[in-house]
Picture 1: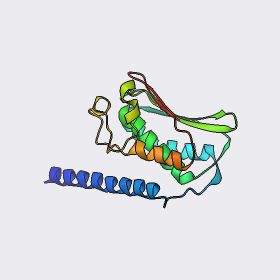
Picture 2: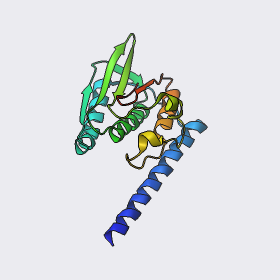
Picture 3: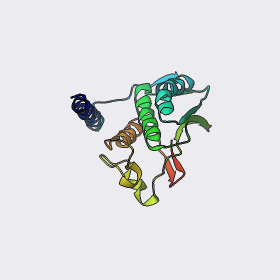
Length: 179
């Protein structure tokens, strides 16, 4: 029956995603994944992410906006892209309405990239836990899909590997910002 096949397919997809994410964590933790630093245009990266996530935002009834920059980044484009993909995926998954903003702004000699959402936010007493492996807060995740609790742990590892500060602020009922 097609319902059973769909359930099996969904379970296999989740298992494949888990294995892939666990392999990536192991590569970073073991030191086998080293950054390949090169210059690239911030605008190109942000526009590509916008194009990638716009269909998902539209299907969820959300607005996705991008505020770009003409500046260049000097980083590992693949690792930075994966980190931002994880942040955008979470922002879209946990926002029920409103706007998700992907933006870049100059901070002195650096460029800060932010993902802002209007999701449920994370209560202060739980904020220290969100970057831990397999951590999903039931108060935030109820009814929001089948996350594995690895996305933010991977983002934290990528930020450390790239020697980039990772910032997070959240206000319950108003949303979160990751930069």
